[in-house]
Image (cartoon, rainbow, N blue to C red; front, side):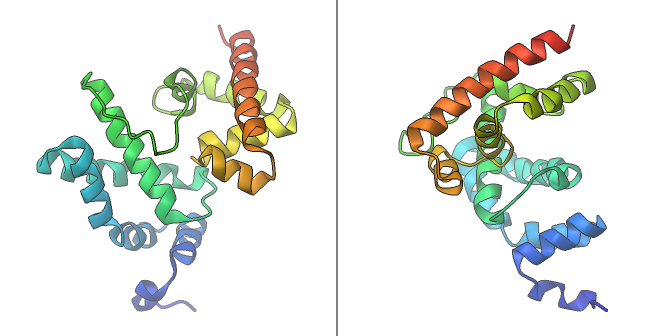
Length: 189
């Protein structure tokens, strides 16, 4: 039997597995608390306001809690960092603020496709169409799209994990996006 007082001794992966299996928020809370200062610093860097940064960290927790089981997370810390960064960038985009880009960081794909992956912005019908269309993609495109968008890996990470060349990964993602977009248009009104 697992004693809850030992929860702080669990690794990130163990906490994630326990949360995914049980749905007990105490596991995710422990995991998230390990990275609150990192998240706050990141949000402060992008949002340039202490209150907004603190609010973004809390909002991120609330947003991730129900959705976490939908992701296949290999390394929690870098995954959480990318999710938090994207959350801040979305907040800035909503305000139409100029976003300074660091070109040394992994290039992200256009929002045109990403909105389909965001459950809040997509209808149930669109999400079902997306999942059906993902299954119809050639395997190399499906794997690349899944790693890049759903697991939020960089091009280099996808290439390393799959064994595809970097140019092939870029090509598979571009072709996969186009094929998904066409397929979804055919399946939704």
